[in-house]
Image: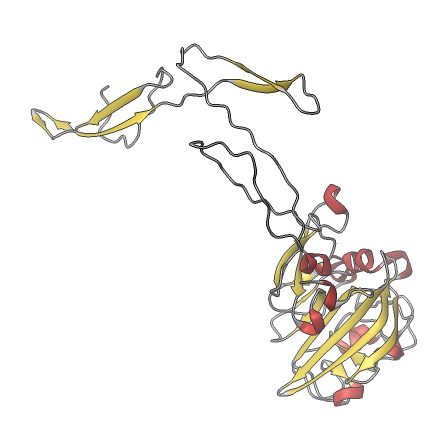
Length: 331
C-alpha cells in the first residue's frame, strides 16, 4: 500500500479472524529506500453473540452464533459469585479441577452507591477531607459537588460556608446566595436552595469552626434547618454546645437577607450596612459573611460571644451532618 509521506497511521481492512499478520513499513524517496521495520499481530477470535437460555435452578444452556471462521475449539468460562460481609474477610473454594486456570475477582459493594451527603460518603470508606460528588435526589437526580470534612469530630460533615483568605466577594445578590458561589477548596457559599434541600430530609446538626491565629473555638447546634425560598430561607437553630458562645441563638427564626432583598427589615438594611448576606435581626451577634479582614465599625467577620464585635475572624467553616450520625459507626 502506497501512502503519503505525511501519513503517520493507516487502518487495515478486510482482515480474517484468528489470522497471524506481519506488517512491514519502509520509506522511499526517489530511488532511495530505507530498511523495513515490521510488527506482527493476530486478529481476535470471538463469537459474535452469546446468550443464556433454559436457565434452571442448577443448570443453563449457553448459545452463541458462530462466525464464518471455522475454529478447532471454544473455551467456555463461567464463575460463581459470592457475597462476603465485612466481618467475614475470607472464603473457601471447593471442587476445583487440576490443570485448569482460575480467575478470582474481588468486587466491593458501596454501602451508599449514591450518597446524599458527606456522612454517607464517610460510611462508604472515604476518610480524607476534600471535594466529593453527592446525589441529594438519589440515583435518579443529578450529582452535586460539595466539600466534605472527614476529620473534625469524627467527620462526615458537609461544609456549606468557608472564609479563609478574602479572595471571594460575599456581597452578593439573593439569586447568587440561592445558587451558591465561590471555590470549594477555598472560600464559598454552597447555596441556600441546596442547603434547604439537604437540611429538610431529617434531623441535622450544625457545627461552626472558628480560628484566629492559634486560637480556635467551635459552636455545635443539635438542631439546624433552613426553610423554603418562599419563607425566605428562614433559619432554625437550637441546642447549643461548644466553646465559642451561643451567638447564633439571636438569629433563630430570622429570614435570610441580601443587599437586593430584605424580607423583614427592622429599620436598618443590615445586608447593605454590613455588606454580606445573612440571617440578620437588628443587626447581628454573629455575621460570618461580612467583609474579610475589617477590624472596625462592626464590618468584619464577627462572632461576638467569642472575639467581640470589632475582631474579624480569619477562618470560619459552617457544616452540617445528620444528628443521629455517630463517629463510632464507621470503620
